[in-house]
Amino acid sequence: MSPSPTSVQKIGRATAVRYGDKNGNWDPSAPVRIANFVLGLDVETRSTALNERMLDVVHPVEEFWDPQQNVAELEIIDRTAGGRIGMGLGQWLVRQPDGRLRVVSHNTLLGKHLPAEPEKPFIQDLEDLVKKHGMDVAIETPAFVIATYLSRSWELFDSVYKARSHWGTAGGSGL
Image 1 (cartoon, rainbow, N blue to C red):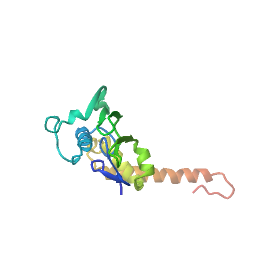
Image 2: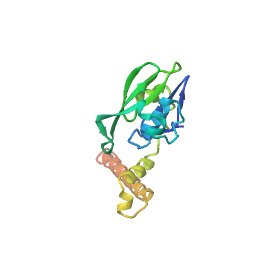
Image 3: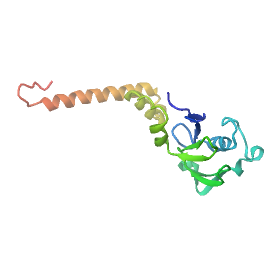
Image 4: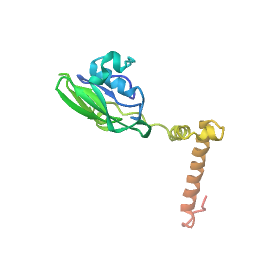
């Protein structure tokens, strides 16, 4: 089971939340989730800077703030340890059992603490890619149809390639 990007993950005695969407990309609610986590609130609470003093614990880093380009660095105030922590999209903010905060990369967290995500079938990756680039909309064809066509085209190419590699070998008919 893959971790939900918006929920708090238990890691032994620590807890963690990811900054960004499930892929670590910009999500307008992400800074609010991080602030809620720092403040000890439910990360799904729709807080504002005014009613929860969000800006007391999370600040955007202006020189690294361009969400349209997927750049949205934060500076987080660790009220327990009394320090400041830099955090980028895709990273995890971990609250240790003593209350101190730590930033951990996604790969480190996955590799050491969270179960691996199951491998998606090739055709599902193709379908996701078609949807991501809007190819299904452009040609008014469902993404699964395009993905099936591409997958079968690849399988046909692969069989032709294998047949070609046998061509000219002793006893090889080529097909």
